[in-house]
Length: 343
Image (cartoon, rainbow, N blue to C red; front, side):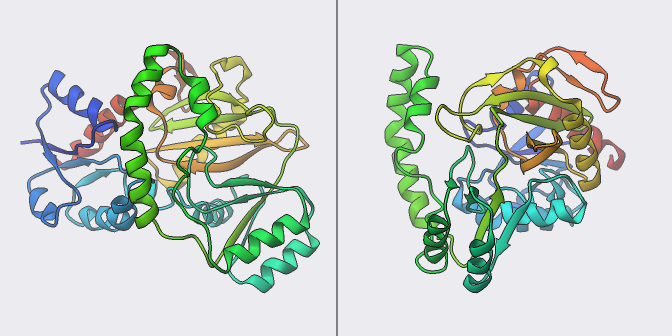
């Protein structure tokens, strides 16, 4: 009998997966992928749904390895290893995009200080400094001068950087996004838990050191374009750059005007997703001085509501399909279809 397994984590995609299965009478069991007996618990299961994220230290520690192991059992996993091995790792994404000749913003990685300092000495400024991990523009910094770059370089190859976000990271943006007084109260109620998680993450997430990563800065982008590909569907929107900043990710200013989406971004996203055999992947684009779309980053994780609020999606032939779709529903239906040949 067909059966799914779902790793339950409140506030993740598992909330809707469980709701969807209950509503549509799809057999499933809840599992804990961090349990020592998870392999035993997955016996007799055809598919596993597990929405692990970058701010889970235990997920960062074992998720990729466990997914590769579960694949050997003949179980279809979301995310599969092709979808997530490069997740929250900008260094891996640089090498991957270059390997398939995808149009990425020129990026530079150095694993020793002498090579890094030589690059800094001859680079064109400004640059964008990034840690390999972090989302929502976390761990991203504008570097205006050679002096600033050298300071970051010496820190990178000495005491390093904390991968965990600060206690009040993006506080202004988060407050600005609050739509009502009641919503502000609810956010305040969650603050103690959020602070506790930050404390835990600061203890468990690895210090980032022994490398430095720069991207070329491409000026005159007042927005970026986010394309999310799930199977044969591509959802798109733009995000406005933060006031007085150069970053759009995490700004909270989303524009759902499909006429403003450059379809080259959609085409590239479908092409790369097919090349990489990914089930679901989001792409962030900006445009260079010649108006060519360039990928900044990719991620299998993203905000579900932001995708749902898209008025529709494009199929692989760039035909427009009107209507809101929860990404969790699309992922689940694709997984069931992928499991079907093995039943």
